Length: 289
Image 1 (cartoon, rainbow, N blue to C red):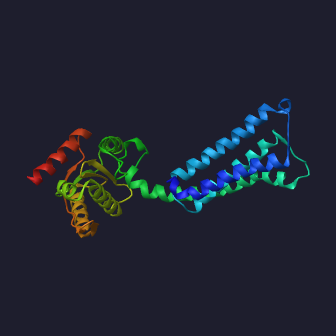
Image 2: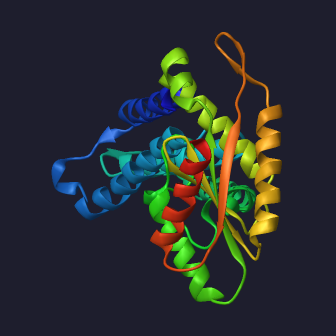
């Protein structure tokens, strides 16, 4: 991600170097006895931490308004704190306007950073809505699959238990979906293309679910769908719809359009979570026989 922001990183590094050269050229060095170490540690530490946050922000985000505001605000705080720190090493005329302007970058940077956090907050609201079907009742990113960014089987197991505790007598169904001939896609097209198929199927399924539904990558090419408040008949109807929309999907592989189809099995959520998951998995295996 940092490669996308190499110009911003270079500009920040040049600004830090230019600031140091400016103070060294325009100011008089102070003797070591006049250095105030507490101020050096405080002001220099703020500059270092703001610089670290600046790099971390750029390394974790694509370009855009929010990224520019967050990174710009942190860069201004870093440069202002760095300039403030130089006063501990060089004696500068108090009437020098440029020195005051450089130090004023700290409150200005905080203002820009605040605007960035404001827009980031709105961005998070939209992302949270998008992730609702992936996370459902709580967030625990250790339980998320690297390829599809969906929850894994352990997360599903925990969610089944939570649903049973929340509404023991309520309707709830579990659907399992399997990609037909996925091993052939991996063998003929390569694992990277297989991962792209998994991602495409996951996105298509999410677009056709309610906010309260939970989609997980169960294992390999299998997806599991937890449907609170839905009986088995409605769950089967939804599963058929999902199979149909995935079959109509035009997935473009390296050698043209790659057909992708699903098969499914469903079961009511009754009994312990492991038993429910084993039951629907066995039904899916029996349907493939």
